[in-house]
Image 1 (cartoon, rainbow, N blue to C red):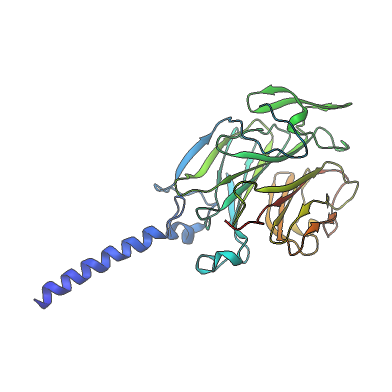
Image 2: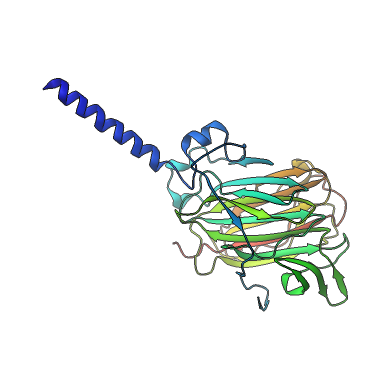
Length: 327
């Protein structure tokens, strides 16, 4: 009888262990995968599904626009004990970054600590190539394209005169015109569900391309973007991000793509803001900064620190993520 009881007990414990490991699997990644090498290492993982992104028209309205229409690594600053903490205290569930050097497609993934209900913000940047204006199952939230360093304003999707599938081949804004291929960034977002594949393949069109994906918690599902603004020539050796309006508990994301090599210290974050993503791609550089706002109002223009670089070699986006209503 004692032997039979021990066998039953051991069998029950084994089943419990399997259930615990299954519950730690999020978006196609297991705890063992994360421990073995993180998001960005090239791994063979039979649990990870992948979806190819195709053109699909889903765009957030902003700035009064009328719409008619493998090198990678994980970056989890200060989030070592994240999984066991209260979500209400964490605005960020990590960042994933990847670069594609003159390839025709790129795999982008959610950060390893992402949970269902988070909202992913994908900042897709390119130097010397075209970026898609639409991705299936994602919504475009902001963009800034430039055709030369001194271009005074960002080209927007509403300035596109000639389309080639999801790509724009010609922009025009008043007297300014061009292909927008010198430098550009497009921001997309999507709410995470338990059925998401965890990784997606994005088709590209020339140039050096890189992506930074960050997972934000408690985002207002009905109205996730409170304000956005872009800058294409700030006339400063530093990067000066345009002012945006936010409310207490919102999250401010600042994206910088730079058309030259740079060290992380060359564009140290503005006061009160942290670097949550940094990568170098051949002779180009990308940064993503972030912070949770502690008051309501305009952020004011925010300037990076450090020695900076050549004037007007950057493309900038300031984005306020709406977390005013807990979800």
